Figure (tube, rainbow, N blue to C red):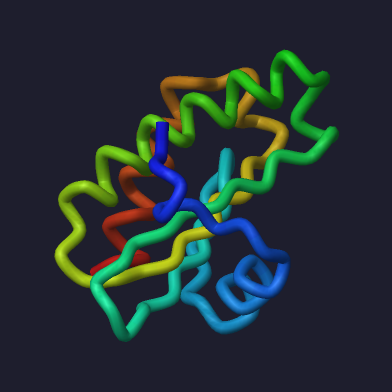
Length: 109
């Protein structure tokens, strides 16, 4: 679970990250990352109904939160991250993990 200060909450934060951030797309997700001037790292998730029903969407969000929390803990510079899950994220959890790792390497580097 991400602590409260590590979560994106306002629609303005999501909008700014998506519009100004670096975008990296993979078959199961799209990652938007924007650098922050301070050392705070925050993350937000977008999982639409196209991914599946409520149970499926929540399962995908839990998987993504787990992956993001591990990466943010190692992050030395401040970033805002928005992870948008695509429909394939629900049916291919192994590929989701691989796609996230690959997208993170490109977006944060």
